[in-house]
Amino acid sequence: MTTLPYTLDQDDPAIPPIGLVALQTDETIEPEFSRYFRDYEGPLYVTRVPSGEDVTTETLAAMEANLPAAAALLPAARAFRVVGYGCTSGSSVIGSETVEAMVKRTCNTEHVTDPLRATVACAGARGVSRFALLSPYIEEVNATLRAAFARQGVSMEVFGTFGVREEAKVVRLSQASIIEAAVTLGRDSAVEAVFLSCTNLRTIDALHEIEKEIGKPVMSSNQALAWHMRRFVEQNQERTF
Image 1 (cartoon, rainbow, N blue to C red):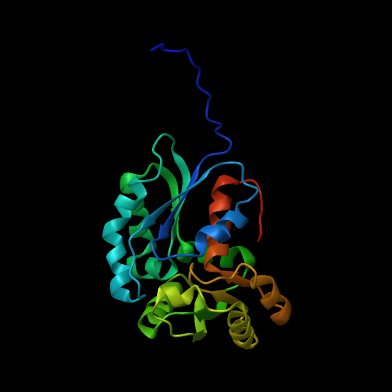
Image 2: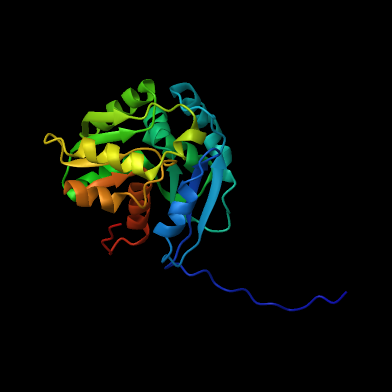
């Protein structure tokens, strides 16, 4: 055997890695993030956290204990600029501060965000606070989510739900159903914007059409999370999706 010489390339600090903790059951966030970050030159690394087949406050709370192990599976050779936790309802049950602490326990990252924290930031940037909420969740999850947003000064008194428990059904809700429901809610004169909740809900191709129909800002879990993560890696650039 001959041991051969080699050199090492230097990592470019201008394009830091970013990370995503996706749910085991999520079939949507990775395909949508591949589009939201298609022009980002740095790497996006994804790990998964065990999650229940049904979305209940009990299954969502159970993710907290598994977050450190999931985050530990992200590459450790470089520090991350930001890691996103891809679960809106999970963020409302566990709490954004706890999510951040769990991720930072095992992953060297400067920032941690989630769809709850990201949507509040996105709402502030767009100057809106009164939302119509469209969710796929059962009521116990909806109530927790709306309360979490209310504590951050974001009202979601107008809301509608598909009432789905099973993650496998959430991802298969048709775009036509999503658009029709969001337009119906968004036309309420009491709201300034619409929020489509759940990272497993396919929304990327629906946002523009809904906005065109109602003439108001429309945000989704994946859109807001991607936007917030981009803000951390591109501090001097204003981006919208």
